[in-house]
Image (tube, rainbow, N blue to C red; front, side, top):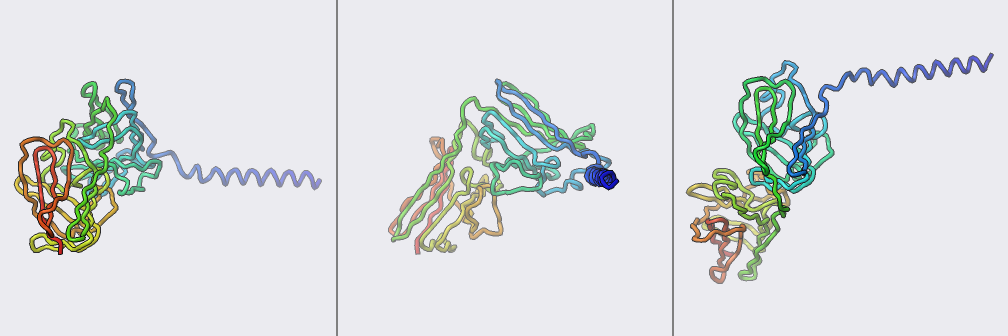
Length: 332
């Protein structure tokens, strides 16, 4: 009798445990945003995007559910992943073959696409220090409403295409080009100058023209530029420097520039160690006017050098394409 009772109690307990396990799963309901993907082939090399696919459900999306001017996971659930078997150029940015996360910063008239080197994380986990590139894209208005967020590819020719992001009444076209040759990341280079026992140095990523229009194109006017490629351009000085009436104390800094059609500014920023696209204006130390000169011969690779201009004076010079920019400083 006792054995039968033990078996009965055991059966009841097992049934209760099964109900407890199933109850939370049932409470979760169906997955609201299933994963989806889009892909395209170029000469056998696959480019794909995998993403969580949310739906409108009667909501106003852009400017509300997806607020403007904030980083968005560009999907739902896990991070949206771009995988490419080919080296890509996305609006001048080099994207070597591999896997990346895609984020965006939506706005009314201009979006920013962020290609980030971290993968495998939840979509809301975003580390700007791992940004590979940030690209400006212009949204289009769709006549017909798109209820479920979708990515799709359009082929332009044998080497280029568009990655389209569409949702609600908004389309985001992202142009890209497939390179048939391996795109080498922009190598690091440096320049050093010793004046009056003071050591001044610049370290920067050195991109090439590669047939592109640089000034006013890849490097647009009116937007802060990292003044190089990849990691931020670093500037160090072991002595105080003076430019006109402005002082740069000894220490380590990051150099940015603000290009203009008639005037360029060199920005000396107190933040260091960040990726080149990470810029905080509130960390600016000084903004210095740069002297601009047209070059007779194009310079293929960005070149930054330091030259002596006297026993205690020097010149920082930047040359790329047919433009030369310079700033003169003194050691104090």
